[in-house]
Image (cartoon, rainbow, N blue to C red):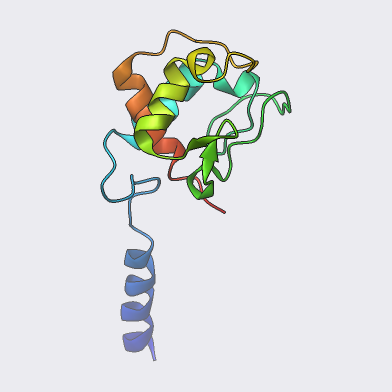
Length: 121
């Protein structure tokens, strides 16, 4: 019995060894660096973001399903390039948005977008 149990347990452990929050195929950036950048830029001060620590807030929309959304900010197609633009310059896309420009670099925005686009329900 134990000869069957050990290989089964080993296979079960190995099945869970994938990289969490790995960027979907075709995306640029590093999701883990993006998660860190989201914390450093205090994005959690307004948004609920899985994997990013902070207060429980409901100022901005929760980002738990950003990878599933069709649009960003209501009318911008949800592509990585558009998400990078939105993160860096939300006021140029929607002058009425409450989201401020946070001084995010191009590299940080690319990494942030890679992380956010992994978030799916």
